Image (cartoon, rainbow, N blue to C red):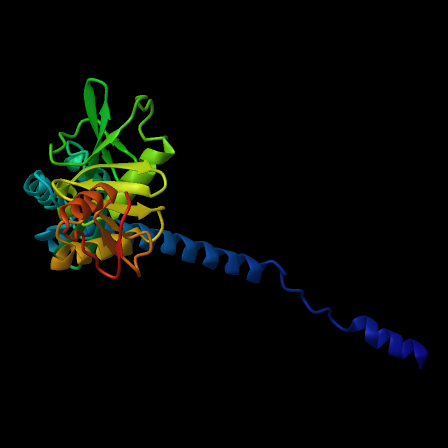
Length: 284
């Protein structure tokens, strides 16, 4: 019985084994075909994108330029518009725009945005001269951040800052001069032509001398915008007429005074002098 069972088992045909590598090979082939297809699709889409990006369908036709001022404002605007119209809203060449305004040192930087499909907005960030550094035998225009604008022809009406030692680098290094130009940069630009000079003088800190007008005591470099606003408010008040100085060291409590010499003269003549906005003080 055992022999017969073994014989039956011996006569059973063996099943053929399938090759184990057939399915993995087909899967790898499919992956290669998919990869090749994706690469081809990417090349096709990339080429189409580059064509569309520089096509007339997205060419710049409308350019808005803001932020420029001063005597070169019109020339800056024209240069930027001409350069921008050679571009598209999908391909902005910042280097070309900077090159267009490179002849104008007053331009510090540009901020550009596009409006699909044909619009571009360019904001000009300027470094206008706010003062003239007075050196022996020559002058140099300077921006509010202390950048020396050696190639800029500064208006003669700008305030002067006296320096005994010429600055050697591209920026001011003298701390007093840096504080002075920062103060002028915080003033309304229209006010600069009314200031003859600015300097640091104890005990009042920064002192701006108005042309045919009083001195403005600014104190330190804090709250400069508020201090100039307070000074303008005092100057606009008819009660400050004839004042020798305006003290806005504390912009919340501005004061105008006649000065010690004016008070002495007025007292000798028997009349009062000086006016105030907030309070009246004497002393220089």
